Image 1 (tube, rainbow, N blue to C red):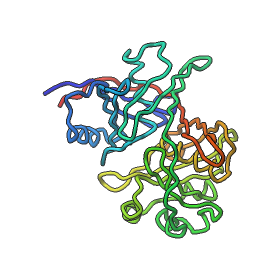
Image 2: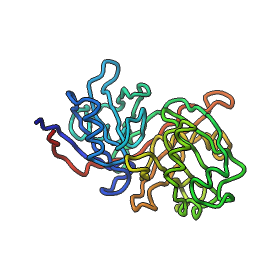
Image 3: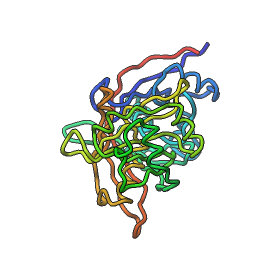
Image 4: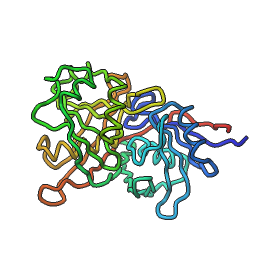
Amino acid sequence: MTDYEMVQVDAFTDTPLLGNSCAILPQADGLDCETMQAIAREMNLSETSFVLPSQVADFRCRYFTPAEEIPLAGHPTIATVHALAELGLIDADQSRVSLELAADVISVERRQQEPGGTLYVMTQLKPEFGRRLNRSELATVLRVPENSVRPDLPVQIVSTGTPQLMVPLMSLTALKNASPDAGRLLELRERAKFFSLHAFTEETLEEKSTAHSRHWAPAATGLFEDPVTGSASGGMAAYMLQYGLVEPGTYRFEQGDFMQRPGRVQAEVEFVSEGVVGPPRIGGEAVLVMQGTIRI
């Protein structure tokens, strides 16, 4: 058996036990794909991150949910860079870190904040606006009344590295009452070729926020709800700019409150040319909550 160092980081928060938790193996050399997947099932978190050497970036990272590998994700990116910094694997004055992900090489900026702390900001891929799905079908999947799904906006797959289905809802009440039918959602996912479902509303808990969201993804036993989703927050920011819900700028998103794991995401989005939304930037804080080894 071999011992591998492992840490656990809560992302999109500066408070332990809130936000979204990620397990990170900062030196995962020697682990094959099947073992990585088994570790992710053992951790049973939204994602587990495995850090490897890279020929094209500072580090290579592979992200696994309990069910499968995912090409790009936000909270494990924030958590991984924070872990590498905490462990001294990134120079203290290094302001930008490149990561080789399955989707592409991305950049993560480390912004020092006052009076302290660090905001980690990842640049995602250029958004792709894909297939539109039936509004009434999504109401059935989410088990909410059809009039809870906004009629003025499309239910649409958006990808900034991982294809996710954006479902705009009318209110916080509709969002809170959503309870996806796992069988219907998994069948729709297979048919429409998206990874996960991101439902959101412009009604928020806090005045300074722009949107509140919930997110569901596949798990070995059906579905799990993700507390705070960075990749989908990027897709949501691009969607909101594309359809005129926001102007180019910086916004704050809420997620996780209904799971008692509130997190806050900073989103930056702009047009790169007339009518063309550029790659969104997603930022958040992080805190290390656990450190030890896993014996395999």
